[in-house]
Length: 84
Length: 84
Image (cartoon, rainbow over all chains, first blue to last red; front, side, top):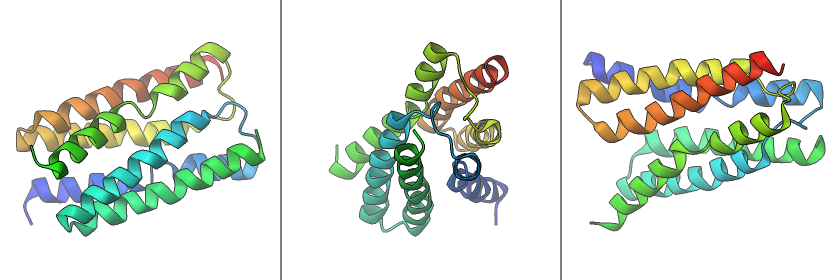
């Protein structure tokens, strides 16, 4: 595999886990006052667009990566409502 | 332009602005206690990887989109240190 491909797959894997530290922190501390609900609403809508894009291109890397980020965004929206 | 391309460019434009509502909220409220520093550190490193990836592919859409997200991540890291 070429270096550029390894870099792309590595970057994609890290992207899919970007929201995880925020989910864990909010889950543990039960406080989401400082969290922007709008940011995670935009992220969720945006990931639906990316999943649709991936589906049209039949690209499972795009679909799966964004499905993970979408699930974390939805958890953050739920945590924001619970601990606002 | 095909629908799939319009969808991809639209999704990319929204992705580049995802962190903006969080930057504005933290800037205005001067409170970042609930924000995960680790999330924005991971995001910043990840965006450097994406910019590198875009540079290797000579793809300016990838470079510019991620440069915007990188700058917002760095602002969030600074806001987190200032208002932790």
